[in-house]
Length: 492
Image 1: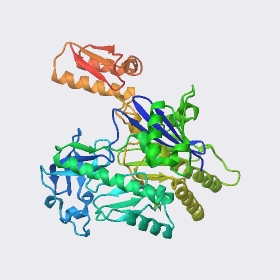
Image 2 (image 1 turned 120 degrees about the vertical axis):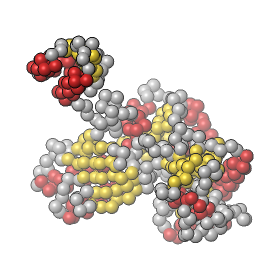
Image 3 (image 1 turned 30 degrees about the vertical axis):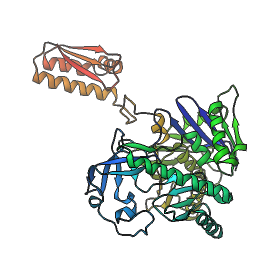
Image 4 (image 1 turned 180 degrees about the vertical axis):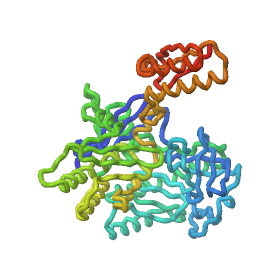
């Protein structure tokens, strides 16, 4: 597959776009003022244990306490074992494992999202280019993307043979290790073990809330995590970043040196490849399909809903054929939009209703096929009794909209505001309440232009009736800085 990776660098932020067949599939944004925390290792202090939730709040030095659930505590720790000992399935309650004031080494597995703090785990994992090191687990796992069983077993034996004698930790073999030499694997093992020993030594003398290890920045994570055998070009528009990435590649990812390029053109890199337009489109609710249909994507705190509509598309054969073709195209588009917008958690897809069971199976198969390109873990549960497709996609960082946008100050994030008529009636009720409680000479209404205009026109009779009823004059004044929902009733 023709894959290109674009890296746009400014002093404030780094943006990465992954293109497949010329279309943007993924976007990653990291701002220098707000780097992601996933992968960071801290020496945390237990600030509160919650037996009822079987969880604890851990202070790692952030504005909000991080969250540690009992299932994310390494199983050996639950049973008093040392790293490398055989794990058992027995689980102690969290109040017997942790106590307030206790310090422990934890790793961030999910960034703070919305009002929720970071999620932590005591099962430490440190990613290298070829392997992921698990200091507390002697198991050797193989990436699920390596499907050949004989090859999986061969890689497992190779890594096991290269491990230093007495090594208590374990490894997960990444997909890129399929073609790696023993020398490269051995270098990755030595580097990861040395890195962990340094972290362990630092933790013995460090104060609580200390950052013990920070994951690589975005440009270097591209070389480690995102480059595959399908990657044809990595184009960077910053000379300094290009030099750093090249140096990193020569030491750790030599195969990617040949595809690394520095862009020196006059036209902005993202604009040249259409990535800027894709970012703008990814912030809209509506996604148009080439056939004439469209998809509506709505993200809420609890879940994301996706609705498919035929729009102006009409197939030449029948209505069922129109619905089927629209759903097939939508399945491909939705899979791409989930990656592009980095939508996670529970996702409900409302395809257009299909009576033909073969059509349903075909749409579901196309959806699964399109999702295979997604690096993030996902599950699709098929059509429910209500005809909805239920799925989940792992959420480890904020969605694109949450990174780039904030709640509207006018509507408070609702996506809509009260009409001028509604606000007028609220003001009339407020004046009535004030007249019953206070004996003012006059009432002055401060409101937006649209609300005052309505009082002067459609609601002028309502205003006159209220003046007669309270027997006090009411004056109107436009406050240009007010939104349509804002107003004040001043007692004079």
